[in-house]
Amino acid sequence: MPVDTQLALRAGLAQAGGVLVLGLATGLTLSHEFFEDWGWLAGPAAWMLATAITATALKLPAARTLLGAALAGIPSALATVAGLHWLGALLAIALFALWCGGVAERNPRGRTA
Image (cartoon, rainbow, N blue to C red; front, side):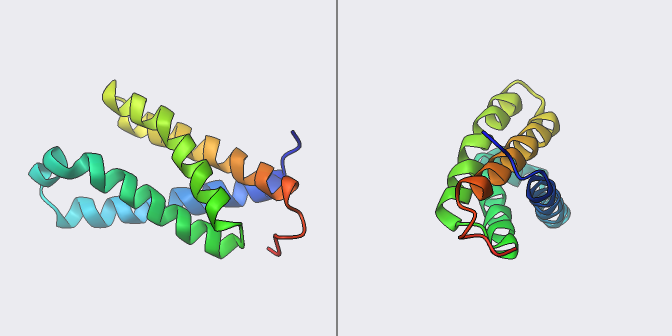
């Protein structure tokens, strides 16, 4: 499957930036106990919020982009369970970026960015 590498790179950078900003914002404002109790929900919610922002900014189809983020999040969740949270996040960003580059190739007329 061909991948639009420039779009993949932009999507990966946008997603990484969104995850970083949301991670810093929540990490600085919420207690460690919050993440122990609610991290399983807060992390995926922040991931999907960053995805929605990325999709909007890059004019990607929202449903496909959110699906790609959900699929890319599966290996990240497994890494988190194994105690490798940030490695999992980097893997998910890379997989998400490749997905976005592939979505553009499958839907070239729908993308205007």
